[in-house]
Image 1 (cartoon, rainbow, N blue to C red):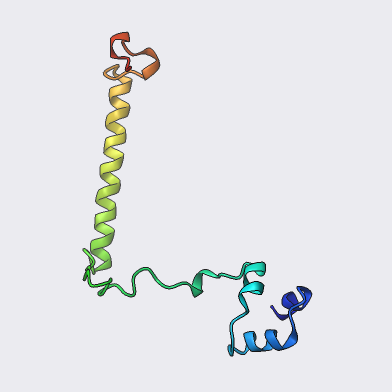
Image 2 (cartoon, rainbow, N blue to C red; image 1 turned 30 degrees about the vertical axis):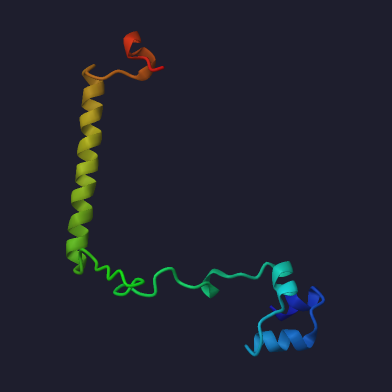
Length: 106
């Protein structure tokens, strides 16, 4: 990091103060270097239990419950896909390109 800053003509004093955590880089250098790491940004929610007074709680606290929920949702998604495939295979639904003319939209 220091070599990068030296290459960009930042003074040694400013670099040392930045590395030691004494001062932040001046805005002119930070903007020019585009230094805005994601870990330095404030969190959107401070914690799980207290999110700006909302008091959200997780639906599942046990990993087994969460895994069962994911499995059920996956099975539901696969069943829906299989259902649509069977309708298409049996000719119960048609692609838009070959559907009836009277179903065309405006």
